[in-house]
Length: 343
Image 1 (tube, rainbow, N blue to C red):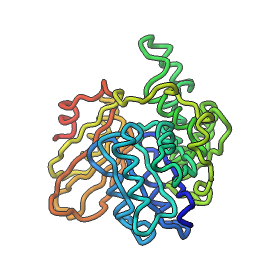
Image 2 (image 1 turned 60 degrees about the horizontal axis):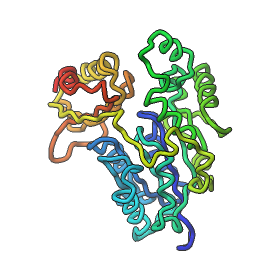
Image 3 (image 1 turned 180 degrees about the vertical axis):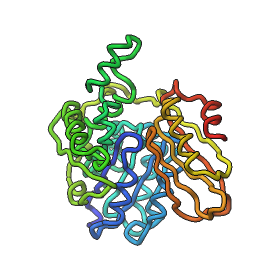
Image 4 (image 1 turned 90 degrees about the vertical axis):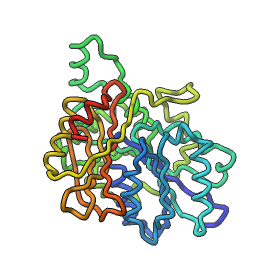
């Protein structure tokens, strides 16, 4: 790449727990000879996703090429956070060949694309493509699509429900902005689930785009990198519920950080997290937990009642367990969450 060539950027968007970090880890392990840089935007104050990616750093994507932006969506803090961070990545001693941006699960991608027209960076960088990840099993179940029969039936039975929920608007805006949609966790959805999810996505997409399925974040990088979409110049083809608004708010969602004491029983913790999903409508739980007698920290990631955990690496100086809990605003009861988690 010459100094005059624009650095391509791939924006990876998708709902909470759709598999964005897992996909980026796969791309890091299969860089196709490219030197990567990664920008991770967390919703909350604990940088779990960035920490996971830094643990996978290598010569193709060293730790200094992985930057986290917490405490605010990058599409809401463009001048203060996003532009300076992109400029810093472009000014690295060894210039990256490709930049990956993992957005917050709550982020709307279109306002972020508008930021690429800022004078400070527009001549040096371009959006190679927007990749939207959709949890196939969840989409097939009608959780984030308003026209799925199960959601329609629920709304017909309850006049107090809005026609559009905040979650559905986020999901639809991500699909509308995408160049490719990846249906993730195909192994959990099965053939019938994938077919159902594809119907929902096709119905919600304003234009025909490729829809691919994958499991465990594994996909040929050549399919999603090098699209040359120049998405920042194609905004009209990417409609949004928020077109005409100067900005957007995340007041529909809240995030809290829970400090956890050392635990003895992992299965009991999993059961508590599942209770949060079923009893308090918690959307997402992620973080690290200290387990008695174990020198390594336990990485916990939950989407609804689906909980995954693994020991990822030894603790540093402090064995401090923390979980980030995300839900719609009206469903966050800090005392009730702490009570269930035993915090």
